[in-house]
Length: 360
Image (tube, rainbow, N blue to C red):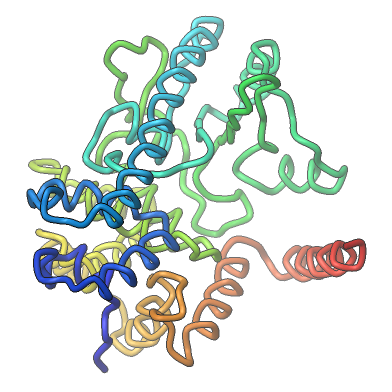
């Protein structure tokens, strides 16, 4: 079965040249990019191809506005990093930056035009209480959570409830793992923590090893049930895989060591199919040899992910897109939580959503 890739994807993977776009195509391209938080990325792609001077002022305004927003987030992140450096000095272990915050502090390829809202940190599970205490002493406090939410986070999840700074408004998600402890595939977080790298100029702040960054990004995307930013996360993976360089040959063995070969397989499969990521198909071939997957099963997952990973925009949907996203939402919850916990949890979420609507 073949899939018609949306305009935005064909521009991102360079199947369609920016120089050949009509004004009508640009209008659609901007709408698709904005829907999946990739408008600032589009600015840098246009800049890379030396096309900024050739675009109309109306187009440039949209792109530059997105870039300014992205630059502000980057500057805010560095300010928060300097404050977190002070927190780290009060601890006897490092704070490990994850995902968007990690890409930003490293100024990596994945950070260019990357939009993110929270700062994700990882520490050992036994260090959660002291880390939470020090963050609170430095101005981050728990956001409003019900007793049920507090209990749910602290008993079953891989993170504590979010912490928000009282004056600056920055939000920290404090993790002790990258998957909930109820998930059968939850990795040994100590393996990740033992393999981190320091951030130059930020004593006490660290990031995951490059291969582990790919694995975490893949795990986050393909275990998640929300795909509003699915294409953005796949663009992250494209950049992270490109940046591996000579470390590329370590990725498959590391994924198998962590027991996370399935999300890495998906990351390689769909970055190759959708974004034509250099080197992804060769790594995928190696993964298929090391951890074979049933072709019929992969065909079913193609039906779902090739739809769910597209921008959530009317021009990118077919009649099966909503159904695919709904099935993947259920799949994510089923993967993360056994049924005896899942059914009461989803029932409560549905009830609270209904109550919330009634209150409005």
